[in-house]
Image (cartoon, rainbow, N blue to C red):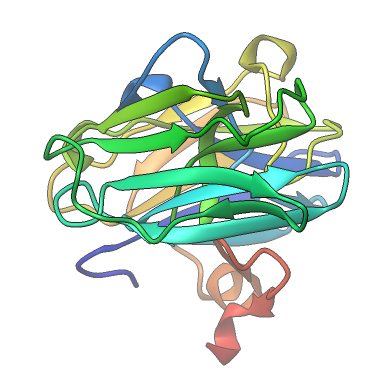
Length: 235
């Protein structure tokens, strides 16, 4: 079970359908301008009667992703000690500078310099948590992006499930998804369980799953390491 800076959400697919479990974050988790878009943070397939243990930490990152060239970069960030970076572009691609403490404490700022090309939705820049993107905007020269992360106790996460053609890092529109279930961790709680039943209704409870068979047979999905799926029994 998670402790300290670690959180986990157990998902049990008790519906009759296979699909993709998608977790994303509420926009208020990191207050920013209207140009900021929500990102598919964690995505994993699940057949009926299967379960997934989603796990993450409250560690921030700066990132960019170029869909055209399938390249990306991320840098560790901290709202108090390393909260400002510069995005630039040269003949070799995009580049984030090493974060420094230059922006107002409690914020995360990305400065895009004049070398950044305006390419619409092809390239995104933003912030992430636990090594995976959560919020981003299309790159744009001479523009600043400022995020204000909220306290962990006020964080709101969402989980949805269905035949959605989304991958980790894709921009999403919650209005186009199957109904999402909000997840909020109370103070002192690091584990929650979300169950989708045969009527495609959600039930969310505090703590991990009750059955040993569910725990031992679950896939472990760690944010930022989406290709490192393992049986949780081996972790």
